[in-house]
Structures are given as structure tokens and as C-alpha cells.
Length: 418
Image 1 (cartoon, rainbow, N blue to C red):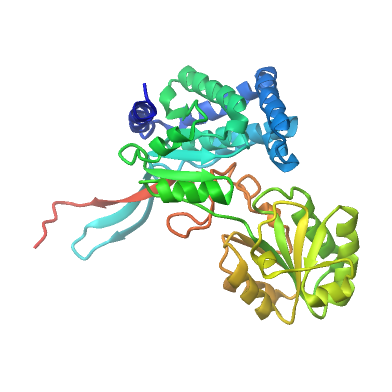
Image 2 (cartoon, rainbow, N blue to C red):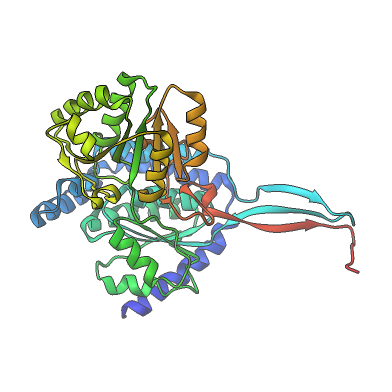
């Protein structure tokens, strides 16, 4: 069987499974999520063996440390996965919810009802935890999902998929509601992207190259974000101890992810005190600074920034730094160079904080908190299927509700149109 036939067969199975999932009750879906959380804990050794194969292969290929780190199914990652599944299980079931009922002059009552998207396709790199997060969210929202992970996580993804399918079968849900493409050949991805008859939406997760490839080749709608050029603006009125901790966390806690800070903007009034102090902290943590002329004057060891640095997603211990004369200048800089992902203001001025929240048009805007919180688990969604920076349908972390859409419904008593 060629890839076209193989992917078409997967699509047909997913479409039939989606039909059954749309009718699945809340209790059954909740049971699946809780059982899966239990089994992931019980299958720790089985998962560790599969994950070890991927880690060994990645290290042999010489993949960057950040990419190898994202592959690891550590105890912490497994706990986050199981906690996420249990949190999703307890969330309200959006399917069937009726919202916004209104009555027309003729007595017809019109409203909207939430329904599943149908079949969701997800193409992603590294991060085998995505397999579980995505499957859990899709099942909760009454969808079927086809997953195609990166070749570097092949064994981990396949093992996780088998556990998910075994649990679906055990609780009485269609096994084909979660399917994983079991080949690393890119030709299979191209065939998957042509299945607009069976797949309702495609969600890519990974680097800019992958996302552009999916967006350019998919025949179905694509929810995407190309990169995460995330900013923190340090205002002139700021608690510097708090600002130091937030900036360090946003850059250093996990630099290889899309919600890590890539550019630090500092008000000119705060810069003479804050920047030398912050630079010393960053130096101790191995962060390379690339700054504007004023930053380089205040921090002599800082490298001069180029125009390319302001729009760069480093995904590394490198940070662009710019001194700005006002919050308005910071907002203009974000609008020009940002990617609509995540921005934060650190300030003690309430009015400025509220203006920043209103005027910065990114998927998450924070006040006095790290950009690292733009994550479905951290925001109380249980998990996320991705972060959308396109504003149609979903904007920001995509949780259960974002994996549904609405249809119109109407209640009548025999009304006829004139």
C-alpha cells in the first residue's frame, strides 16, 4: 500500500470515529482521560524504554541540547501529562452547550450550540508529550485526531499512541479516534495534507520551517504560529527585585521554547540602574546580550545588535536588549518586530499596565509575570494543542473549547417565512 492509500485509509477511519465521538457522553470521555492518566503511570518502564531509543538516536545525530531536552519523558514531564489529563477530565464538556439564545419578533428563538470540529490533524516536532496532550484535548472535545510526530520522537510517540488506543478500546470508544502516522517519510505528510475530504483542520507545532511547509501545502484550514518573538518591557516605575526574577525566568528557565523572552525593552529612566544589575545576573547564567548603542554604553560587555536581532527567535541563551524612551516606543517596537505571541509589562503603574494590555495585540499579554505562562497547562486549560497567533477561530493557547465550533440552532412553534 502506497502512502496515498495509507493516509486515505487513516482519514476514513478518523472520519467514522469522529462521527461516533460526537455522540460520546461526558462520562465516557472523562473515564478515558482518567484511565489514560492511570495507565501512563503504570506503564512508566515501557515508556522509558521507548524514550531511551529516541534519546540515544538524537544524541548520536548530534541534535542541539535544547532539542534533546524537549524529547525527554522525565518523571516531571510524565507528571505534567497525567496532571493535565486529569485537569482536562474535570473541565466542563463544551459539546452541546447552548449559548446566546435570543428571540426574534416572530417568536423564533435562535442560538448557538457547541459542536466538535470533527477530525483534527496535528504535525509536530520533538515533544512526545504533545501526543498525549493533543489526544486528551481532542477526545474531550468530541473529535478524532491524526498525529504525525517528528522522526526524533518516533518510538516514544508510537508507544504513547498504543497506550491511548488500548485505553480507548477498554472504555468503549473507537480506537481510530487517535491515530499516529507510523512513518518518518515526508511524502506521507504531503499525502496527509491533501486529505481535505477527511481532515477538518491541520495544526502544525514546531519550528518556522515546518509551519510554513504545512501552511503552503495543506488543502484544509491551518491554525498556526510561525515563531515566538516575545518581549518584556520594564517600565520606569518598577519593583527591580521582581523585575530581575521575572526576566531571568522568562529567558533562562527554558530558553528553547516559543514563550521564552527574546527581547528585553527597558525604559530610559530605569536603564542605568536595572540594566547593569540584570546583565550581571544574565552573565552568571550564560546569557549573551545583544543591545542597542545605549545598552552597550551601560553594559560594556554587550555585543552591538543588528537589525536582524530585533525580530529574531533565538531559542537559545541569547537576548536582544533595547533602551526605549517611553512605553509608547516599546509598544511600537513590539508592533513592528513581534510575532503576536506573548508580551509582558513590568510596572507599578496601574494605568500604564491597563494601556499596555489594551494596546498590545498579542495572544497573551501579561502584567508583572513571566512570558513563560503562555501555556495551556499554566493558564488552567489542562493542556493545549498549540498556540495560535492567527486570529481566526482561535487566538492563543488552544484548549478544549477552542477545539469546538458553533452551529446555529432555532426553536419554533410553527413559524413560516413570509
